[in-house]
Structures are given as structure tokens and as C-alpha cells.
View 1: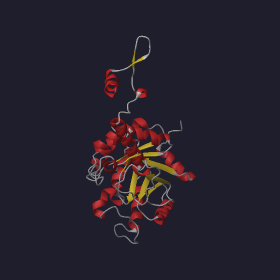
View 2: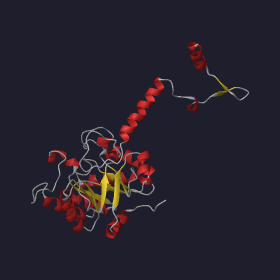
View 3: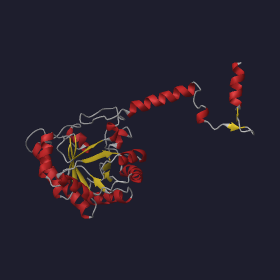
View 4: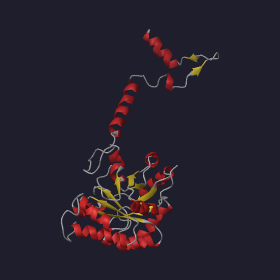
Length: 293
């Protein structure tokens, strides 16, 4: 087994120029698959609200739900660093609430770090959580929990200046996250040249999603990577497989075989044995044979 990935390892990877790989996962089977494949960071993201629960946004996801999914992934992963997302409303109300809820993610969810969205406005919160030895991953640029303020999932940092969503604002947010003590920061939905500038300026690792190749690492939603989510596909999400279509075909084949009575066959049945050791026909088979002839 490869050596366990720990928080300081990400810093060493940035300094060595080794790209960091990250994916989301939400349960034991996929957590095991992602871990076995050699991914460095598994994020149990609030994106589970959309790709697992079928919601329109991430906003309704609760802390208890994140903890539930974190526990499943924690039992699966052996190598990857496990990061738990802090849902909307669990860290914005007060610093005290934020520390308490981050502690629950670590204690009850078996996480090794937490992630929260926001830059300058969340700096005090990041500092408070970090001060009690809970590693914090920041998240700036397009922040999905701010979907209503932004008017949708819109690219940030395209315009110069200090206006909300402007280039300077994103840079200030990234700086604030680092200064507050975060060990890494996700850069989402920003132009590649801006992400490159931030990556060069910050001493902590940057992990991009829709932010170009110059970040220190990349993260995607697993269901996008595997073709398991069809409601929409962001421009930055590359589908490496079409498991959703393969699953539909497999289930349709199963339905057809059951209705045609070709499943279960002898190879998938526990056959009765006569005293001499030969297989003995069941009553259902006898009835079908009698009816046929």
C-alpha cells in the first residue's frame, strides 16, 4: 500500500512541483475505488445534494448528512487525505458555531480536514478553526453556496477591479485564506491566467476546478468524471467514462431476462440434489415441462 497522504504532504507536493489529484466521493464503494486508484485527496462535498440527493443547489445539505457520508468514505479510504465540506449555515452565523461544527466533522465524521467557502469575509472563521488544530481548506472564486448572490454558477474574476466577482477581489480572497492559516485553497470557476497568478503568489497549494492547468492540483466531482450525472455538465468537467449509460443497459438486460425467464438459470441457482448426487428437478420446472408437452 502507498504511504498515507497527510496535510503537510500537499505542501511538499507544491514545492516539488508534483500535481495534487483530488476527487469527491460520498460512500464506501466509490471511496474505495477512488482511494485504490491513487487519488491524493477525497472531498466529501456538499455537491452530494445535487448528484446524490437530486437537489437543485447545495444549500439544503445538512451537517448530519455530510457526517453520515464522511463516515462511509472514512471506512473505505486507506491512503487518501479525507476532507469534509462544511455545509451552508454551519460556519457563517458565528465563529463559535463554525468551530463547533468543524469539530463535529473531525470527531463524528472521521475527517482529517474541513473545507469552507469564502475569502476576506471568512478569514476570522478560518483562523479560529485553524487555531484549534483543525486543518482548513479554503475555497474562493465561484463559490456554489453563494449561488443566489452571484445570480447563478457564474465565472468569477473576468473583470478587472475591486467589484464583487472582479479579478482583484478574487486575489484578495485567496490572500486572506492563506493569511488566516488555511493549508490549501480551491480555486473554482476563474480564468486560467488569474489562477496562475494566484498559484505563483501563494505559498499554500491551489487546487483548481474550472481554473486551468497552472494550479498545483485539480479536483472534479466523481459523478461528472464517471458519467453518472446527466442534469448538466459544466464546461470544465471531463467525462472519463459513461457508467450511467452502462448501468441503464445492464438493468434493462436484467429486466428482459427476468421477464423471459432466462434468469436465474442453473448457474445462478442452488440446485436440489438427489440421494445419488444427481440434480433433481424442482416442482416449478416440472410444471413448465408438463405444460409444454
